[in-house]
Amino acid sequence: MFYKDSDIINSIKKGDESALDYLYKKNYKMMVNLVMKNNGTEDEAKDVFQDALIVFWQKTINGELIMTSKISTYLYSICQNLWRKELDRKSKLTNEQAEFGFDEDNTFFANEKIKAIHDCLNQLGDGCKKILSYYYFDDLSMLDIAEKMGFANADTAKTKKYKCKQELDKLIKSKFKASDFLD
Image 1 (tube, one colour):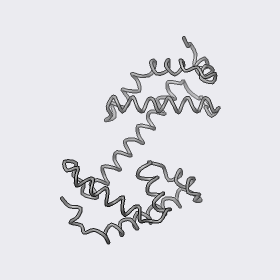
Image 2: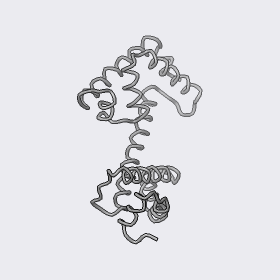
Image 3: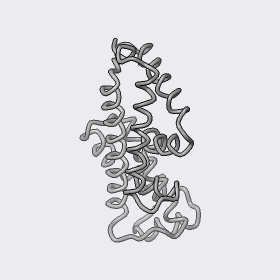
Image 4: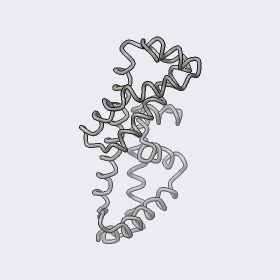
């Protein structure tokens, strides 16, 4: 049984996974409520909470953890951030489906459209392919993309992403008619 946050942190540093079990049981309801009150399901909440625990575990083990609040507050903020990113990712996906005329009721055509877009994406240069994949599929921030690609800053990554997206749009328009994407 753990009585203080410092006991939990010390146990994790020693590799004691029972500390994670304790945190999971103690904070589960609060984290599930957070996600479910913000348009999520219980399964999504479980995934987010498990990811948050992994982040907490890794930061503790690596000595990167800086506690300025209770562990429960820290986990809550991690869950909030992870859930916000997930909602942003879902929103981007929905917006792109709308932009390209995807009809959720017609998955065959949606899959064909996705395949066509992927084919065009694969024809782009390596840099553009990476940038767009990082942004749209891996949900990386512009700062993360800048670091991975060796750009000077996030603004450079944003400019490159914009140009690559324009190039992809041009390629798609050169190979397909608008009617190919309309159901």
